[in-house]
Image (cartoon, rainbow, N blue to C red):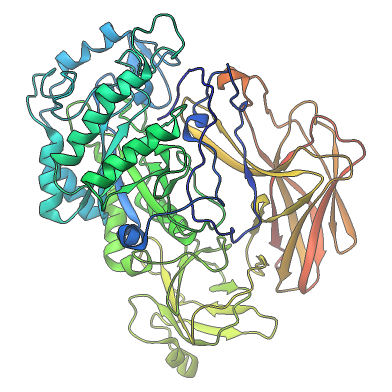
Length: 638
């Protein structure tokens, strides 16, 4: 969604979140590409601003109440770019199709690109059907692109004739139709608006602001198009729940604040996302496709897509099934956030059937299990479990079992509360009946052990639900020890987000494999000689465990040795070149294309209880050392 070549003199603003600490060890967010400085062009991720997750405000309680409750929304990317769908003059441009016009993709001139408007006649667009899809999917809000970076308004704008009613033969305002359909269905409506980038306009960022070819300043573009169009969107479409800005880039705080003040004066109840820039929004939007490993405080969202591209791309068939959508939704809510997933209608306005199919399947699940999502809070453990994830409401834990265990048991560490009951959600009997009589009619028995672990015995037959849920009622609000537990039955992954680091950095890397196709990995990296990473863990059962390491390395780091220590027992990893490539032609500004592998290192013996695992480089560090993403421990069960 976001990429722009431009010289700037101001620094980028922080994303927004409440000023409380993370529930996992704090870690920095670092671009995989070079940080922007004066006289250097911005990369795509730099346009979002830095992910400062500790120093920010959030919306007041009244304005943000619906955001904390709803949890799940639909994003719609639809524009002129939906017609070429990633192809221009016989060439396919793989990645995100809404950037086709950009000088970093097909580099289409304004005169050429605007000819698409003459062909745009989306007669298959049906606002009622799209809203019904959102209802069927269990979504509570819709945010649609009113104007993307291409500069074309998908509504009837009085401030520009480069809009769907004036420049096309369609002669309708789809946002008016969508606003009415949302109002009729009780769905919240929001508008996406690209405030800094407008590749159609002089001064609007298709050319660098300092280019001698510019005939208008950004200030003039901002005052003559942005402010009037945002005013139109805020005054002509009824109640607006979200104003979703994008890529503030080098905008000043005064410019960002001017838009905030405009929203406050015309739609005082509307929420504004952090991509307004300069720290003046209401909630934080993480990077595109970013699924957080750790809990965050405050109000924030993850934005995702039903396939890979945001705008419709003819070649992108990588549709997410209902089960995957449920897992991503659940994991985001379990980290304390909201989930907004995108559909990209075709040029004729039709929603791709496979996108709709996955959403409807997820909606069927939400119709039965929505209480585990809507209004739920994040997991007090602050991380996923080996078997799934947890959301919370009051004194109830909702255990979402992604992987149904072969041995019929799931395990939970660090729960201090007494358990009143445990049962499969939507089953009829509480588990104490099962404890007394051994009945297996959807019942869940539990065994709280003295070592702080709780074992739940599940019914023999897996429920038909895409993601079964066990509801555990406690004798009060959850009280937990959030030390990561090593599951005694199945593989446990210890992500580097939960490690401490002395003499190295704990950092999230992000990179693109295709244009705009973002990938993320937490890492211990930039090692110094004698640096040390450490995980503190809780082990339920003593015994032997298979040990694996997930990492990336280039040819310089190839052959380096890394010592892992388990209670005095050492095991060695010799790193291999994983195919990581610096100065990759796939990355902007000579960035790195990361490639990860998981190596089976050996068998280690773990004792019961709390302990630590450490990793240190053996000998002198070269090339910054490995990028250590995670370690995995799997019990050996004879």
